[in-house]
Image 1 (cartoon, rainbow, N blue to C red):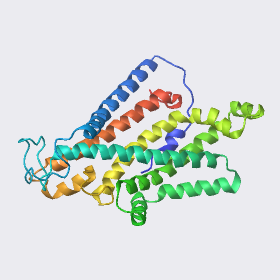
Image 2 (image 1 turned 60 degrees about the horizontal axis):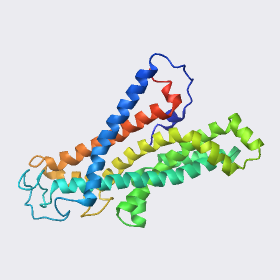
Image 3 (image 1 turned 90 degrees about the vertical axis):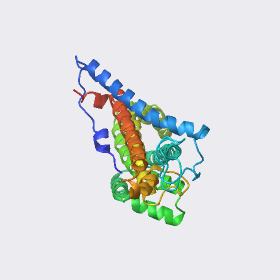
Image 4 (image 1 turned 60 degrees about the vertical axis):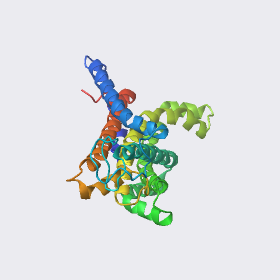
Length: 296
């Protein structure tokens, strides 16, 4: 569940623009485009699912483990449900889980990170240790605790994943904000009488958002994987919700006779995660000048 926050937050020696700058920009743009295409294909499935579905998600009249054809593009599962319909609704759940988890992580993580950046002495050490403990806390165990307190729903999974990711975001924000607070323009703003809340809003957050956006994009991919893992274990969205993780779990017993039930959600899951990671990589090159200088 953790992301390489230290790498993202590490300052780099600025390099002058050279002959390779144009190639780096084109490569970053190509990476970003490929990532957007892969992610957009899956997003299109999710958006269309709100307007149209080939069959009802709980329609079991298709026949058990029917092959592709006869009105079923990818065939049916062991209960007779249309696989393509389940893939479309699964895409909707994947994006909902990813966006919801990232929103929870950003809201809690940015708030805690900014507050931790202003801490000094023993309070700073205590908050740093607390964040490290939260990062090391297993997401699965946290999900079990949340599910025990609530129920096995998509909301519980989103809350558990968002809480786990908030510690990663908070540690990154703390590192970035502490670095920004040492800059001369922060001293000038404070000398001119600007309040701390206004300084944070006008000077601190705008200077950390490029690295933060990249990290949140990475967290989106991790959240999609985490939701699939939780659904595979029965801790995600309950039936008849067709999470990709639940589809993989249900199809493992019939993989040799009907491999499409496992291959289709697995392929879409891989495409989505690769797509968002390529977007994060492209954004890192485009938005963060520190990492731009490290590319050759």
